[in-house]
Amino acid sequence: MSTIIETRNVHRVFGLNGMTVEAVRGISLAVQAGEFVAIVGPSGSGKSSLLHMLGAMDRASQGEVLFEGQDLARLGDGQRTDLRASKIGFVFQTFNLMPTLNVYENIEIAMRLGGVPRRERRQRTGDLLAKVGLTQRARHLPRHLSGGERQRVAIARALANRPRLLLADEPTGNLDSRTGTGILELLRAVCSQDGQTVIIVTHDFRAASYADRVLVLRDGRIRGETRLQGDLDTHQVLGQLLELELG
Ligand SMILES: Nc1ncnc2c1ncn2[C@@H]1O[C@H](COP(=O)(O)OP(=O)(O)OP(=O)(O)O)[C@@H](O)[C@H]1O
Ligand SMILES: [Mg+2]
Image: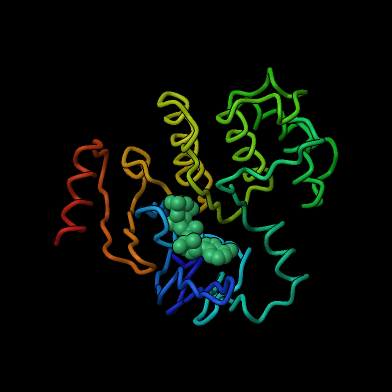
């Protein structure tokens, strides 16, 4: 197995109105290609801040983030944009869909940026719409969709270029449990069939139970880590996480 993404003592400090917030305080982690990792932790513990750095969306204040062994701090803005377009898929906590593009176009545009030929774009967009259950919504604008439907468009868009690394911030946050299960199964299939790597941030222990490994964050640090083997039910995962929290 090879490491796809790694951080070494990474920090992120935000300055706002003369105040500083240390959102991430020295995190070192390594994720192997093909792994499914869940990051859990209370609100404000630095989960999104960490995920943005892993996805080359934001730069570390200190420490290193290495993607396939390459230090992201050494890349210029253009190279970071290329990396994001070709190898990383990102599902934002707030979706960030293009409001004037319909569902189909929101997914397809990611492939245009990734240089996928037209015929293949059409094929893949259709497949992705079916996978996330939105074929009937292809011509709708984001504002005419429910929160959960927008979430699924954002996931389809992030998968469009078959990224080596998929990062998703609360991918089931707006979904009912049945749709959420469908999305989690899709993410797990992406790992096991296509060898892609998935890292999700979640509050949801049921979502975490789909991962191979769960990292628990608190106050910008990794507080604990647990490996999940086989199909665990939510109670077992919750039990293991509580042990980490208390232990
Ligand atoms: N752009 C920013 N400017 C200033 N402070 C920020 C910024 N982004 C995050 N923070 C602060 O950093 C801390 C961690 O935020 P972050 O969004 O990473 O938490 P989180 O674990 O994702 O929380 P949630 O579960 O609520 O999404 C918080 O105290 C937040 O207010
Ligand atoms: Mg967050």
